Length: 412
Image 1 (cartoon, helix red, strand yellow):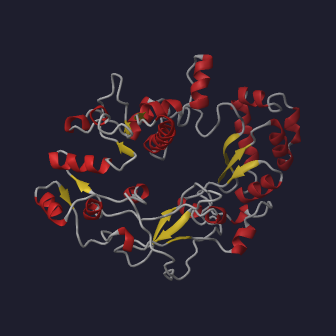
Image 2 (cartoon, rainbow, N blue to C red; image 1 turned 90 degrees about the vertical axis):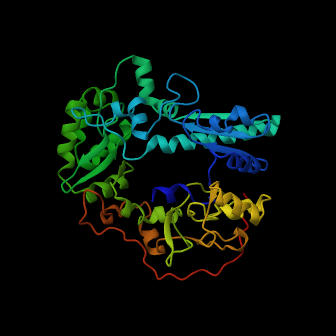
Image 3 (cartoon, one colour; image 1 turned 180 degrees about the horizontal axis):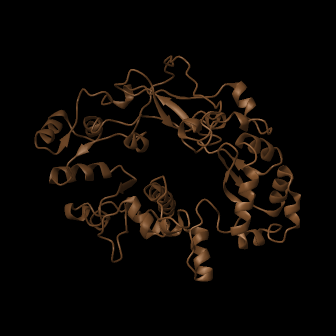
């Protein structure tokens, strides 16, 4: 699952770059390449003549992006890194978790993911500069740098006050209430992020007396008196069910949400309406496979799901044939251990003859209409806290392969 989440729209070649013949193949491919992205430990590719300083003279227009744990400079540059190490060293774990518990990592590999995202941003900036100067450059992305940059308001809280931030669990350091709230039958999220929204919450709760209490009636007062305010609000929200709170709060424009499992996320009508669940025909699979859709929506150019995640080395032969190698060269490279591939493996066919079909999975019009902002839908949403509710279910329509519209030609 991890591999498929990262490798859609890619061709795969299996290449041993520790051999001179493998290094020559990379240089041959670089002749027609705009960008090289690598995430080996700092200095690894230098050993094989493939570092940026070794390539920039021969390929002055190349954008060379390195994504490492600690970057290519500094005293930690040669250290290996994993996401949890970076969460610990970058400060995010120290501010994550309940106040009297141990530091807590995030549920996602946050800095593996956001380092890659910043790599893309850096590459786009370097391409823009190259359009003006004609020159490429090295884009050096450090996971630790990214984790420090993403401290954002928490980091600025420290820089402004020079005081350590105590962990506040699911609460917000500067906003109250902005947290998980208990209900009569579970939990939900409440984000009354200003005094007007808090007053509306009080109206829904029939507790307007709180607006006369100096500990409750302003945001600053609620933050200062968090130890009193939070338990008091918890007692209020425990009196009604999650569905009741979500419906009434949404109706009054107060920020709120259910807490959903992934299966509920991928059944949500809004998520489906945005094309965030797709199916693709994968070579070797009898049934279509489900994938997460792209979050980018363009007004003119629809996202193109060209290729499903490949098998390792599935395109080695075709990529080399497209770049000047002949069958005899390829067989010799394989026998020498420089490359590897499965000539007849599903997915190794030439891209010009490969038809890839991607379909967005949609909710019915009836479900989309029912999910519109009307203050009447949340009671039907199943959440982590309320597994017995009648939640949305994934559409299970019979699969029929779409007729191909065109052949896709994919260039390397």
